[in-house]
Length: 453
Image 1: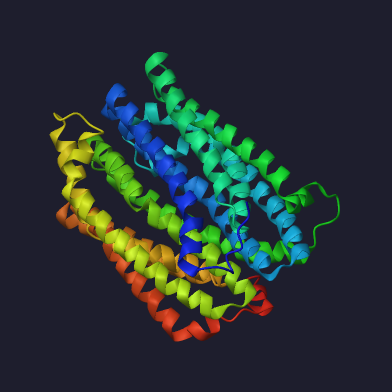
Image 2 (image 1 turned 60 degrees about the vertical axis):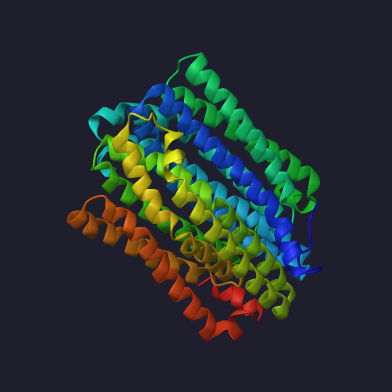
């Protein structure tokens, strides 16, 4: 059911809309953790290191599509808030064609550059065999990732966060079941884990596409043979490409850090692979809340409801900070038991490094929580370029400091670079908001047109 976020109690509307998104991605993280558990427990630390490095690579590739879909979704939300059905249908068609083209190009490049990945990520020889086998199969799921994220972004943009949850849940459960069967039952190794992922991705991608086409009449414009206006392509490109750049820069920075981590050997790679999954699980709810907040802001921005935007902003900051403080405390205290979920107790080097990572990252989740809200705010008020600036500050600082500090204090320097980057980006985003907030919250078609240039 579509939900109009321009009416009703502010925080209740936002939280109820966010809840299915949070549950959906928690399920996705449960799958990621289950995948890591199965690989780590039954295939060993070399396989765990291979799958962990592959996860960073796939996150970067899919972030390109996710960014395009998120940018389009923000524009869909604004048009929905305006009640401009014609513009909404035209935007749907233009964005589908644009993102489909990028998907096909990305998929071709991924396979063409398969053997260049080893040197780019500094993958050790003993890990590369498993990693290559894994990514050669997982790359086949890129098109399915496009299908799921495109239709999920549209449904969320018009206030329906339940249907994406259903298909994500189906995908997560199927993933885990196939993982157990392929890896343990059939002894297919890392290739089995990759195959399970791809099958589940296509089930959810095709399923949500069919459901969305049935439930949403506006999406049937995709079947129209009428020409797509160049102005709509420019509008979508201006909005989506900047969000794509923001997502890609963020994950490219993470990928570069992954290469640095890999240079410290398989034990550190395995520790990082496990700790990052715990990290992502811990702050995933606040990331999804930031995306829900963005849809709320975008719909109200399109409807011209500035006071409602201000109330939503204040409430969202409070919710995010309280959640992050609680989660930081839990991760800090239970860092070792969490690491023991992934590796045997005898792997003391891996456990110690993972705990060190979680003690540093886990103490500063408020930084990433506020940053997700800032990303969502600027995307929603037709300023996606500002999200790019914040990402460059956050990730640029992280990459530079990671290389500098690791040369002085070792791998711990990589872990400290992250919260420093979050803090600098938060300060920049907040200062920019208070300087420009009156202009930022005032909707005008010219705001959207400026994103085309």
